Image (cartoon, rainbow, N blue to C red; front, side, top):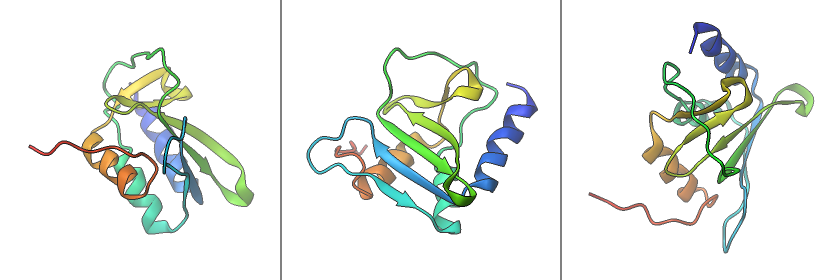
Length: 122
């Protein structure tokens, strides 16, 4: 992955004013949440950090959680898709990239009620 990809994803987070986090197929008590504060966006952006040097791979499913990033006046800047137990997909990467903090992201999603999973503890 070239450095242009890093600039693209950084630009996405800098321009973000809100992120709607939604389960792709809600079940039970799963729900969508809106992240809008500067600190909340920065926290979530950190949890969505990927290994940009990795070769993108393609998953045949549609993913489990979507992150709709909106900018000024609600304009959609990008939609990222998380595959639980996998990585993060964004159309600019031509595939899915591995997350650096997959476990922490899963815990965040559970804590906010987006997914309803039990995280195994070592």
